[in-house]
Structures are given as C-alpha cells and as structure tokens.
Image (cartoon, rainbow, N blue to C red; front, top):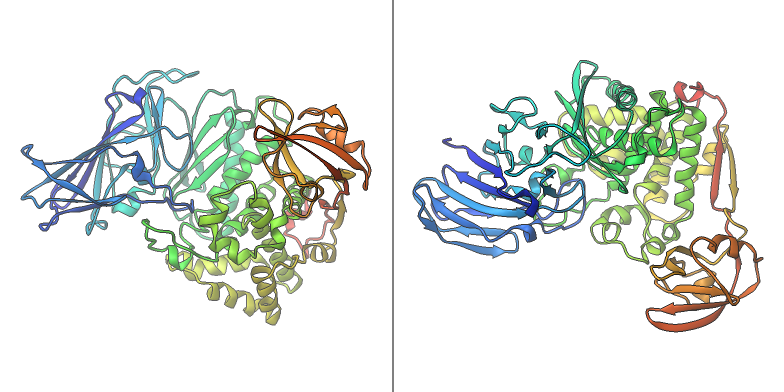
Amino acid sequence: MLNTIHYGVSSAHPASHYFDICLTIAEPDATGQVLWLPDWIPGSYMIRDFSRHLTPLKAFTRDGQSVSIAAIDKSSWRCAPVVGELLVRYRVYAWDMSVRTALLDQFGGFFNGTSLFLAVAGQEQRPVTITIEQPQGAEVSLGNTGEWRVATTLTRAGAEPLGFGDYCAANYDELIDHPVELGVFDYEAFDVDGVPHAIAITGAHRGNTPRLINDLKRICETQIRFFEEPAPFSEYLFLLRVVGSGYGGLEHRSSTSLICNRDDLPNVNEPNAPSAGYTQLLGLCSHEYFHSWNVKRLKPDVMVAPNLRQPVHTELLWFFEGITSYYDDQFLLRSGVINVEAYAKLLSQNITRHLQTPGRVVQTLADSSFDAWTKYYQQNENTPNVVVSYYVKGAVMALCLDLMLRAQDHDLDNVMRDLWQRYGRELKGVSNENIADILISKLGSAAEQFLQQALHSTEELPWQSLLEAAGAKVTLSAANSVSLGVRTQAADDGGVQLRVVDPSGAAAAAGLSAGDVIIALDNLRVNAANWDKRIAQYAAGDSISVYAFRRDEWLSCRCVVAAAAHDTCSLVFTEDPSVWPASLASSN
C-alpha cells in the first residue's frame, strides 16, 4: 500500500449504530500527521460538525505501539511523529435518517464519506483504497428477504458487483462524493443512451418498480441529450430510501441519495397521469440528476475546491438550485412523463409558494443565496417572514429569463449549453460576471436591468406579464375568503398551534405569536380538524374573541379578521411553440 491511504469500514455490533474505522497511512508526515474531518457536506450549506459523532481517536504504529494524538480544534487532530505506517482507529455514531450523514443498525446502513473518513492533511490528492466489511450480526431487512449487499459508484478494486470488499478512489474529494448503501435492497439496472444506470430501493414497499424505471429512463435520456454530448459519468446510481414520512435528496458526481414517502412510489394501478406524490418523487429524481451537470461540474468558482472546514458563501445558489428547480419539472414535461396541464399545475404551485412567502419583500435573492448557511438552513418560526427561497424564487426567475430570451429568439436552454461548453465540461468555476456576460450578449441592457431587479431588490418579478405576453392565461385568487395571517399545526394537547405568524397579519396585530395554542374562538372549541371551517364562517372586518395558551399561561384577545390576499396562481397554457419548447405545445 505504498503511497496509498487505506480505510477499513466495519461494525462489530451494528444495532449500536457504530461504524468502526481503521485508517492506515503508509507515509505519515515526519513532523506529526494532522487529520481532519469535514464540517459540512457539499450540496448542503450548513455547518454540521460531523466530528461530534466520532469517539476518541487512538493511533498506533504497525507493531501495535500506542501513538499520542491531540486535538487541534473541534475537527482536527495531530498525531505524534512515527517511523513507518501510522494506524488510526475510531468509531462513528451513525443514527441519522437523512441523505447528508450516516445510518446503521442490524437491518442496514448508509454513509457519506464526509461523516466517516478522516482526511490526511497534505495527502488529500493521493489515491485511497477502502475495504467495506459486512457488519457482524447483520439481519434480514424489515419487510425484505435476502443477503446484505453494497450499492455505490465507488470504483471496485477487487469487490464483486454489489459485494463487500475493496474499493478505491483517486483522491479524498472523490472518496467523499460516492455515498454507500449497505443491507437488503431492491436493485434494478437499466441503460440510458449506452450509460449503465441503476436504482437501489431500501425499505419495505409495494411500488411498481418497472413503471418507475421506465419513467426515470425517459427523464435521464432527455437530460443527457439536452446538453448535446455524452453524459459526464460512466455510470449512475439512484439510492432511494422509502420511509413512512420523509423527503429529500443530495446530488453526487455519479449518484444521488434520495428519501421519499412510501406512498409516493407508483403502485401497480398507477394511472398514465402520475399521482401528485409520484410526480413529486419524479421531480426530485429529475432535480438531483440535473445537478450532475449544474452544480457538480458547472459550479460556482468558490465551490471548485471548497474549504470543508468553514462556510463557503456564494450569491449564485439562485442559479444552481433555482434554475435546477425550474428545469426539474420542465424535464418531466419534455420527457413525456407528465402532460401540459400537469406542468401548468406544477408551475402554478411554485408561483403560489413564492407569492405566499412574506419574506420575498424583505430579503433579496442574492442575499438569500449568500446567507443560506445562517438563514435558509437554520430555519425557525420567523423564517418565512424574513427569508425568500432561492429554490422557489430562483425557479420563478429562471422562468422569467426563459420567456425574455424566447421573446428575442433565444432561450435558456442555449444559455445553459453555452455555460456547460465554456465552463462545466472543463470543470472551470463560474462567476456572477460569467453568467451576466452570456445573458447580456443575448438580451443587451435588458439583462443588466433584470438581473439588478431580480437579484438585488425585493421588487416582484415580472412573471405575470411575461406569461401573459407568451399567451398563457393567468388567474390570481384567494385560497380562502378571510385570513388571520398564520400557518398552523395540530397541538399535542389539542387545539391549534400557530406555527408561523405574519407580522403584518391580523393575528400579529392582536398580539398572538408563533407557538401560541388557540383552544377556542368566540367561546367555541377549535382543533386542527375544524379550524379552516370555523375561520371560513367569518367575514373581513369581523372581530373574534380568541382564547389561547402561551406556553402554560392563559391569554385572550380580540382579533379583527382580514380579507385574504389573492396569492393563489392558476395557469392555462396556449399551444405556442414559438414561445415555449415544442414539447410544451404537444399534449401527452
């Protein structure tokens, strides 16, 4: 193993949720080897302090002599100088059901390298090998039968396909960009334009896997052909964990980790037009797959070689997440898995989410991107009031750009392909100026004015006028007749808890706050089941007696009901291929 760093991954008791790691360094630093663990994972912009899950590290020479090791800070350590190989052993607690960290029990496991693998300072560019051992005491997964297997796009270095054993990576960056699934899972391989693809589904389910694969093939094929050249990976893997309630995804260079609700999988009787839940799952898959180009290879310049020990800020998340959010649904349409009416509904829902976010008139889109670390990724009850989503508003901005470009005989497709050819294919970072230059070359001064408005002000985007100019019918209505300016949830002990309170709304004017539990309106008990019906009985201007608890203290107030805002969007598209892609003009 000369010049090679080796990681051994095992578990003596998986039910305890611990991975056992043995790191072997063939040529440690003669002055004392420094080790460090990332504090965040690319694609998820929050300091997560993965080191908090490590047990104390122990270091040894090859012949078993103990080597002292001391902490430098919360996620780095220095080993005393040694002659010859250095072995470092530690354990990682893995009990997080998410796509960002690690999970292990006697029924299966999952990990990202950022959670498990200490980096060897100064040797991050050296090749590494990994031995993944089957955990001891592994059992048959709940709801499934069969032997434990391994699903990953790490390069096999002796391991059989789907087998435990030896894998390798060219360097540390490659090592941490290939998540690993362990356990009993459904595995299906399929081909897309000559590129091997596969899906590993973990968790009990009765989903219609052939239907899912068929739809995924259409989406993937459409995206590969969109960029007009072979896929930027030699294989691709969807790692899908199905649970009772959950949603999320994280992109990697040749795979993606996904979580979905069990009921979102297509069933054996799934109609030709996919259900809302299944459409959401396909949209998630489409989103993460598009990231293979837009963020994994075409990426902000500051993310080309990011410092994983501290936040790396960029104003460009509106582009890399927002534009991806625009295209994820576009590719459902272009691939034919949904029709024009379904796409119009998805776009309407996104615009509605944007309009129903009070924070859109408080925070700019550029600031939303830059402050993702401290605001978007660390949300509280006031977040909707002061934060705008770079996913949601970014997608609306992408729609506006596409319509503006199409009105000038261009389109956003060609902008994306141009950026891919100039920067993504060569793995060159993209700056604000690079994107602006391409848009200005096609739209002139109008692009500069639009970018200033869309990114650096809180003015409403011109989505409505652009859609209407393109021939779409836009209708704005109120979801309800009246509003208290709140978002609610069922309270644990009965009643209705205010989850979010709009500071400009009726409830805030009455002195109510997020967290308050309302138990009665006008002397009549309320709960989550009858809340909407009760509120609908009032008219704008009516005064309601409100009885509530704040923590364990009683309060009462009077609340004057306000008229509900017209913030629910409905779209109907005309068949106009001169404005929309040809696929948008053809019903599926």
